[in-house]
Structure formats: structure tokens, C-alpha cells
Length: 199
Image (tube, rainbow, N blue to C red; front, side, top):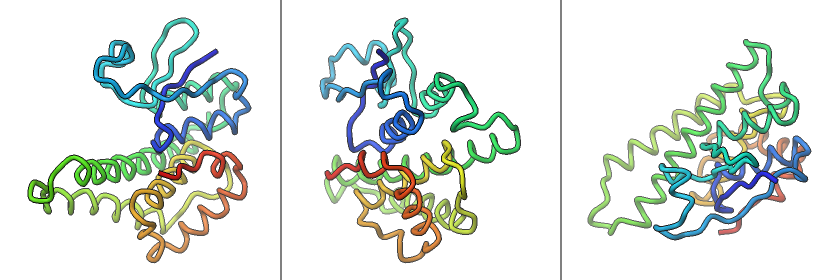
């Protein structure tokens, strides 16, 4: 059994959970909460201490979520969530990279509020992270993913879901096409609702 260590609220872990369900791999992959311990053995296997991290049956360790999703696609036979056709492939990989950047910026904004006292926070740095999110969403609003369930649409759905969870859904007012995309994705992919975090 392949073990993926994760934190339920992580949008990057949610990508993997949705992919596993969508690809029909639930009988081959289990998800386990990662220990919150500075001395845990997982850090020896994953020196960046990033989650999610996949521990394969042969002892191989895979991280980050993009690598794990590529492995899952391979495990499912390929060309399922990462197209073989080069034009489609690089389009969905670029969408995934943009959505991952939104998640990175949103996570960093959360860390700024959780781990720094108000007088230590940098307005310039906060504005820089918010700018990344705003520009990325504006770009994807112009041409949201359509049709296939792939790494791009999965990542974008997880990014928008995380903005709802941690940032109050402020993105929705200015991005009606992304709202429509997320509603359709949620209706088509039951795992999206099944993996929704509440805190």
C-alpha cells in the first residue's frame, strides 16, 4: 500500500486526494495525517519537510504534490490527468503551476498572520503575495479550464477552495467565471466535496 502523509486542510494534499479518487486508486493509496513533531522520522525521508509526501512500497519517497500527481497518473496507466499530447500537456501543467502559485501565496499569507505578531508583519510582503493571487486569478478568469478533469483543473479547484477556507472567499465577487468553473467541477467530481476541510 502506498502511504501519503498529509494535513487535511492542505490544498496540496487535497489535490492528491482528489486525484486518487478520480483515478480509482483508493484501494492502492492510503492517506495518513503527518505528525506535527520537529523530530519526526518523516523529515529524514523528506528533508524539505513538505506535505504531502508519498512513501512508496519500494521505499521511495516522492514530494511535492506535482510529482505525486504525475506518479498517480502513471500508476493509473497514463494520459488520465496529464495528457500525453504535448500541446494539451503543457497547457494543463501551466494551469497547475499557476494554481499552485496561488496556493503558495495563500499559505504564506496565512503563516504571516499565524506566526508573526501584528507589529512584525510586512505590508509590502503581504501586498506582494496578494498581488500574485490577484494576477493569477485575473488571468484564469479570462480563460478558465473547460471539459477534462486534469491536473490543471484539479489544482485550480483546490486553490479556489483554499481561498474560500482561509481567506473568506473574497475572490468570488470579481471572478464569476471561476465561480462557475468551481461549481461545475464540484458537481462533476464528488471527491472535491468529500475532501472539503472545515478548519
